[in-house]
Amino acid sequence: MAARLPIRILGTGTYLPETVRDNQYFVDYLDTSNEWILTRTGIRERRCAAKDEFTSTLAAKAGQQALDDAGLTIDDIDVIICGTATGDHGFPATATFVQAELGGRDIPSFDVGAACAGFLHAMMTGVGFLASGIYQRALVIGAEVLTRFAKNEDRSTVVLFGDGAGAAIIGKTDNPRQGILYADLGCDGSKANLITLPAGGSRLPASEMTVAERLHTLHMRGREVYKFAVNKMQELIDHALAETGLTPADLKLVIPHQSNLRIIESAREKMGLPREKVVVNIDRYGNTSAASVPMGLDEARRNGILQEGDLVLMVAIGAGLCWATMIMRL
Ligand code: ACO
Image (tube, helix red, strand yellow):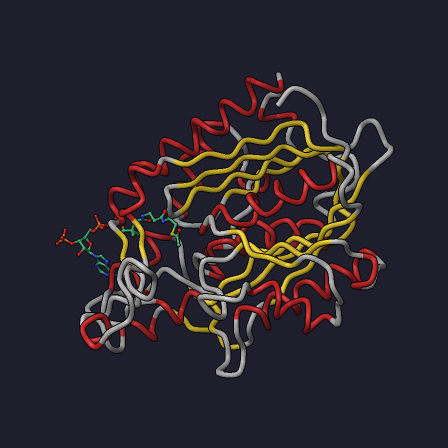
């Protein structure tokens, strides 16, 4: 990316379901332990959506909070883009339900599918609209109800995931210091089969067999993804810093996707950053896929850790395998 893009964050929001599921929940029916989950992943607990909550419910609540934070209403928004891998339906897009829930009318509302990198892909899509002048303000959301797609009997995946949503409203800025200094999206489609929800699409439509074989649940070759992610995250951060001429010390905060505390810690140690400069929410929320980065961003803004003028680096890797990096001066 050659030039600064004059886009800023106008507001952020989060919604987390009330129900907390701790590690003991899994210890009670699976061959696992609190110690294994905590030391191998960093997860202590995660949130679970209530029966009457869907991905769009979570997304709309986070979106409303972002609107309130920005002092705007849905009528001020030109486009809604939702990053999710666990939408309400195969179609229509989850963003269409979000629009209805927020009382919006006629504005384009669609989803972006890039799994854990979904929020940053949605952000870049919104940034493209804004930078080209097509739209003035976008509501960008990362929302997931992953617990509903987990294979309950698979200890290597079911313990990992949680439900949640984070949202941001982006708009143009006239402040020459503010904006997006770096953005990079990518994907290695040859690794698409490492994390899949195999059935329910055109490749493998729903049938008695797909239900019996639990093919409507998430399947992941975790060790292979881990090896890829731990190296890729470092490569993405190094590249972003090299391209912008920044050092880790210039960053106020790094917000990495939360798939495994060991991946986050590895990146933090290589950057030589203290713990407080790298966001961790996996301990409380598990892997919330597209929601982890916007929830981290919102929490840091609300706590006053991130303020106007601060530099933040966001980075995510997920199914696809897809990745995304963004450096923004707030
Ligand atoms: N409790 C106890 N033992 C377990 C559990 C569990 N919950 N899960 C797995 N094990 C066992 C395995 O069976 C294995 O036993 P074995 O050696 O006897 O075969 C052993 O622990 C080690 O298993 P690994 O899979 O090698 O464990 P690893 O240390 O790699 O941790 C994990 C697994 C947490 C999944 C890790 O690989 C990981 O974090 N991967 C990356 C996940 C990721 O980045 N996903 C991307 C985003 S997901 C998305 O896009 C929706």
